[in-house]
Amino acid sequence: MPNLMGVSQFERLFREAASLDVDKSDLKRLSDFLGQKLHDMLIVAQAKAKANHRDIIEYYDLPITKGLQEIIHQFRRMEIGLELKPILENLATLPQLDLEYSAETREKLPEIIGGLTVALARAFKTIDPEVKNPQTEHWEKAEAIFNTLL
Image (cartoon, rainbow, N blue to C red; front, side):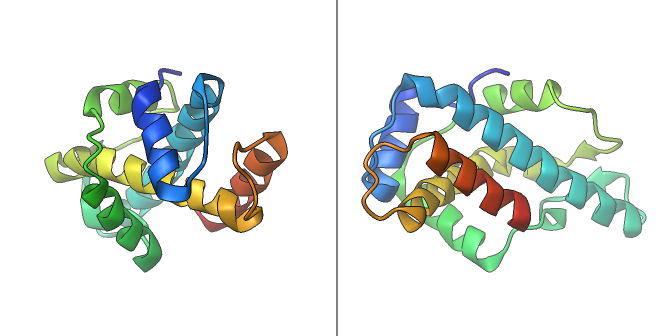
């Protein structure tokens, strides 16, 4: 899968969000995780759109909780721009959805990815407040938590 962000963006996000040091080797793991979580959210959004007899996924169909919405706002304040193209390239490697995304949904994907990244960084600190550089066990625990919630 293509990486969803550059190494410097990734390092800066984790540093600002949770004072964590990550490196290039963690970037693929992050991209795989984020691509799968975004796809999971789009599957739920697709079901909601279909249940409402629409043929397009609107932003409000996405299962964005109050907590994730707050983190997305915090991500915006960090002023770390993410590009849409790598996100769409990543999604193209996953199973195809039946419905397309609205322009607003597509436009907001970088913010959702940013919010999920900040949430993941903070989850590492919740799992282990002393962690400085997340290891495999931290990734596995965080992924298990996100898989339960998203």
